[in-house]
Figure 1: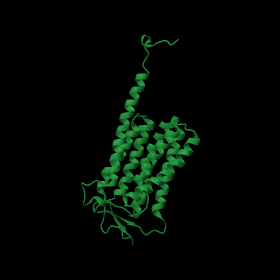
Figure 2 (figure 1 turned 180 degrees about the vertical axis):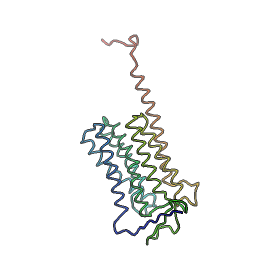
Figure 3 (figure 1 turned 90 degrees about the horizontal axis):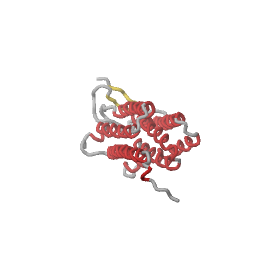
Figure 4 (figure 1 turned 120 degrees about the vertical axis):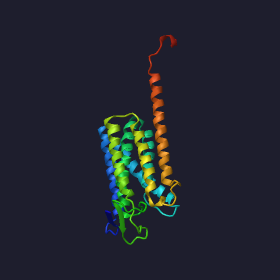
Length: 254
């Protein structure tokens, strides 16, 4: 079978380089998307700085919590939650551009996540379950964390899947202009991550016990579905208020 060799003893900090590239690519994509939506540049720059800070904060916070407060790194899922927090803050500060900000950063999340998983793929900090089929990975290096057997390329699978979700999101949200497209995109991200997590080595012996990542993904799915439902209700209310006024129901105030 075709096994791919991954050498982890690099002279450069490959993990941090990939993470920084994911930051730059994701924020640049959101920047361009907001420009196409004619959002003022001061709003774009403010939201970019806020998102960069919240992604870093969320990534470190979730990393600390999931490690039992024993280590600090950058969690990609935590970074995604940081984006959600930044969107919530920014859309309350500048509500007139709520929809444009929400769309741009919502579509950016799967792209940023896709690129960030290359960091894990090349460093071997986390990996798939034991697997010796096509495109299996074999890690070599001095780090104790590395697996001793061939493993499934779960990180590269996430990179490919979330790149596809990003393209779908651009088509659905910006080309087709689907009203609930951004919430459907959030649900797709949650479902994709939740299912692929079963292919990680950490799930080899506890298939029916959900991981912290899976619980957070389940929360994303539920919140995404509820937001879509609330948007429908909001549209219904707006339509009701826009109905023609019956003159017989009005009262003149003199």
